[in-house]
Image (cartoon, rainbow, N blue to C red; front, side, top):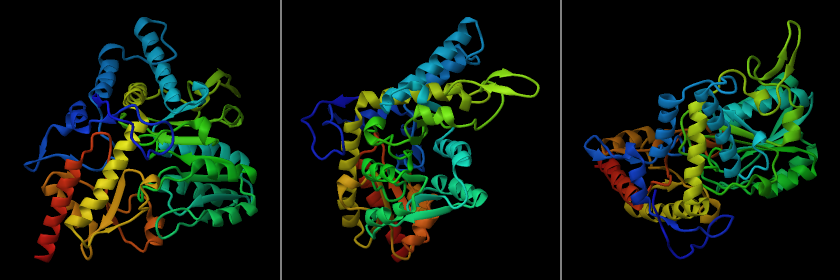
Length: 429
């Protein structure tokens, strides 16, 4: 891990100025997967919005669990069992500190943000949504923050309403204000769009929703790895995120929710660990958060999540945000310079955009773009990115998407630009 001290950067989104600028080129040494060639070229990984790569400290922490103290948690009164429990609960505390949660018991470990949102939909939603009740979402939601609510309102005969976006990818808050007259029970939206990179004004939306009597759920999967997240400052009620997008293992993630909500919610899954007492005809539930963590958890993955949170904390999330903002600025200049007919989507205001660049080349399908780029070791995503309604709104069948992380560099963007020149040469001659 390398941080080079620099003068304070300007233009970061939220929080104090970063403690130091990231030396991403040096940081790449922490990520062993990047030290390889693909199709005879160095690997240029530009798909971190799908999943991030993992640093050595995370890989080593997971390996150490399985090599040195693999045991179930909360049960074994022997040395390695007690160590496993301590490390697992220590990871919960690390994650709580990372997002400034006031109480680590408000952190429920899940497999990913999708499971966290489903937990809220099944537990809180089925206890609180009745016939005719409205839930407000947005047009830019990932399917994970859309389909669970579709199922819920179909079951409960409720209604879904949607905040539209402007042509430049921003939420139309004047329409949101009108929708709040419907007195929705819940407002659920993404913190940072996985497709457009739009950074939404969470506190403003939360304040508006609360004034109308609604609870607020935020999908933070694309925010937690890239921008400073302070749960208390955001003022929301539920916050879901995945570990695998924030340098942590696959199968790790968390739901944060206010204690009083978690205590009132019925269990999501039933079985061992989430109980206090079990009798043949009734059971008493465990305290939070264990009430929502039935069965044997993914102990090693949770430990890796805690280590990843510490890794990002050491880098400084303001520095991470500043680095990715600079990458976006560079890409928005370099790509059109290389391929002038490129179409780039999302906000052009760098203060409102995260490290995501969705684009298309005229008359060339994004899948063909991605396949040709792979010949040069360049990994980008192509498709609808689990945002089919958003692509319908934009009248696009699909897009290609480049996305960044702490190990991304201007050289990666230069490689992408050169690769796109080759794509056009192949298709246009």
